Amino acid sequence: MNMNQIMKQAQAMQKKLAKQQEELAGKEFEASSGGGMVTAKMNGTGTLLSVKIEKSVVDPDDVEMLEDLVVAAVNEAQSKISHEAQGDMMGMINQMGIKLPGM
Image 1 (cartoon, rainbow, N blue to C red):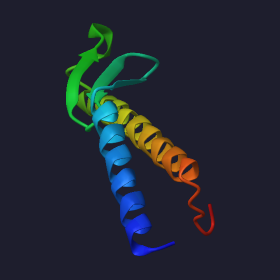
Image 2: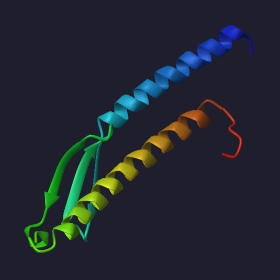
Image 3: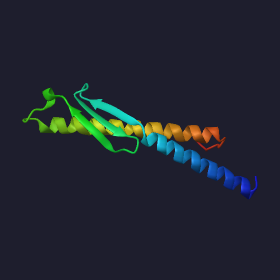
Image 4: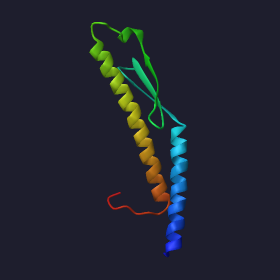
């Protein structure tokens, strides 16, 4: 493979990566905790779009539980984003025929 071919392949990979990032940014990811008592919605860039909290989970005497549920829902939504991004990246790498050690 000559240098021009390598550069063309790198440019093609950059374009595909940019397209995947744009598509990911346009998606929304939702996760809940506490059996659906708290729900967090994020976009593919990790921006928190909304948090929904059921009234029954709001207890002024146990704020810590509510805080934990919010953190758990947000972390789960972030995990979904990461999982999707990683899957997209591996798909692109496999499609291009690139062999990565240990993968």
